[in-house]
Length: 567
Image (cartoon, rainbow, N blue to C red; front, side, top):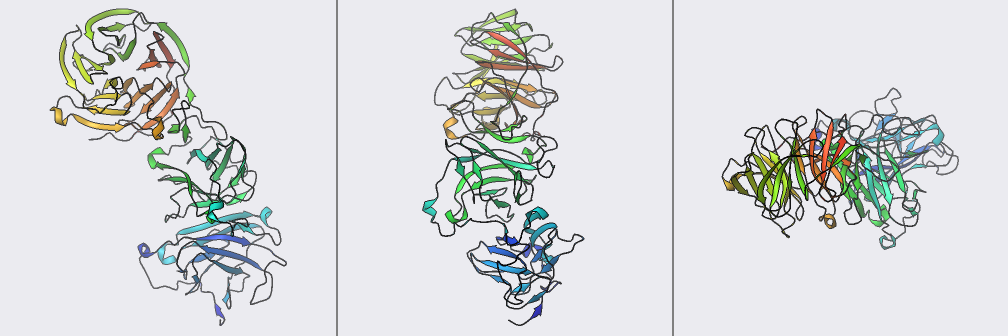
């Protein structure tokens, strides 16, 4: 090859940035300093080098792409444009010598050298495409030693067969995209994003060479990193990975990826030599990103597992747990199987029902004493809500899947059938509440299916349903049996509060049914929920304990941002 200068100006005609194809090319490894590892074939010396890798199945021309030894366009200005016709064969490497010569002979030589004081190896698309970041790896002076390379390694596994791979059960347990105070990076003192893995096996698992990503692997974003040699997770242990864009290992493991506030997909994959099998993924949207709130997997019991929920009590490096509500007091209820709870129009009393055959509607005070009983001969009544305008009482009957409207004297006014599929009669309607701003009614179907339904009862039957939201909560299909119960509309925040008796948890939902926060209510057989904001209390009813519990309302309420309701 004849000698020519490495170009430092654009070598392509002006193109539209949208024409750029972000081929999957990455920085595989680099060496800053050497004495004897690899001799430069053109100059015969032992200089630094950068090795790129083409993950594509076809050759890729990266002429015009940019390589750098410092952050691009920094004061150090250590960068070069790759010459026209720079090809990388499929699944192959390209070595670029960083010796300061700035010429092309048998190999490409950059005009910059790699600093022993530290830097950032960068690969960027061409300038006509606005130099998109393709890959970066940062290093410090502590990482520089003669004849030691740094970067992404497969650790001598190039000759292993995919069938040799053992798919140990390691999963994504929790992650945080954005934080200001939860956990400081032990190496750089920053509050960066992180991903937590969990090893379900009863033996230690070496996941060296496994891949973590912040976007679908192979997507245009190219947000992924290879776990370094010696990455081992203890049996039933946790591993925290910092997603801060700094690819190195110190006290913590740092990857070249960062987590986008616009949304993405956290992924865990097996090594490249095993053809990167998918081990686990969790997707998230921009609406799921709030500072110091993580997204995590949570199991309520052995048979109700792997719910993906926002966690306002992040637990990096520890088992996931919900923030526990503070119990303030409890009052016995002289009502058989009490169920349902709503604040009456004065704000001084509650309405509740008995779900026994022939049950009544009750008005009780804040200590649980019965003030009024309306004998309505109810049929499996589970929920109750008082309309904020006409003051009628709306009662949800579970088995009949019916909403029955009574006046405050107990006279039935009308009935509305709720069209919801079911597998068992006793898995029907539970909680009910009314949106005071629209007059629409929200009801919860207990399970099989779990669903939140919004109804405009002023419409004809065929057009009443405004929302049908399956309440999967990100869980595995085996967790479909977890039951939902009471429901309450919080007019102050315009969100819904929901209780699950089996989970012993309180959920805060937006008006589309999306979880915004979850709290541990820890009492059993909880069937109903209501809020009194002036008292800063949450009230819960347990049917089998015949008890009205009072909890402190969390303040401030740390939750995700609500999504707009459906039209």
